[in-house]
Length: 170
Image 1 (cartoon, helix red, strand yellow):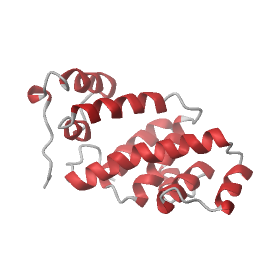
Image 2 (cartoon, one colour):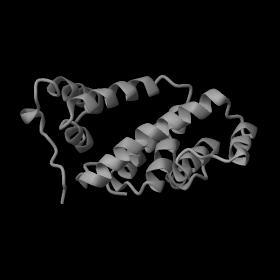
Image 3 (cartoon, helix red, strand yellow):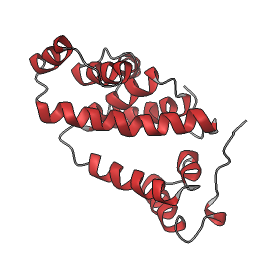
Image 4 (tube, one colour):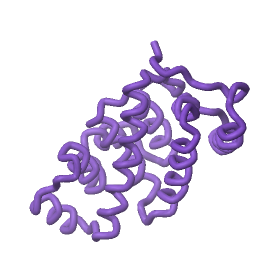
């Protein structure tokens, strides 16, 4: 049972209604995580702005999804795992690729995201060297850290709220 009730589009405030409508236009529906974020209009707006900015990074769609899956697996977020399993499939990852990404084994981006999440950013010299040896430059390292941070926000939100999962079961 959810511990922070989602706010429907019909009950959204003047501050959050346009934001939720934009999500609905982009995704086709308003996922519950955004309805929960609507309790804090500034946080919802900041999250959407951050997501838009992260959409412009040099990471490919599959790399972004691999990072999201690895982070969500470490943080134990069933909601985000369901959502990003769907998005990863749409981005072209196979079921096996998705499982590998969840465990940080798909590629160097997934491994780095898992390591950043597990260590809370305290990477070892060896982990950074391995990422660089795999072709991840400092810019991409920072982009992965930013994706982990953004994903961790929704992981913690959904874990705390026990948000009802409105994505296909995994």
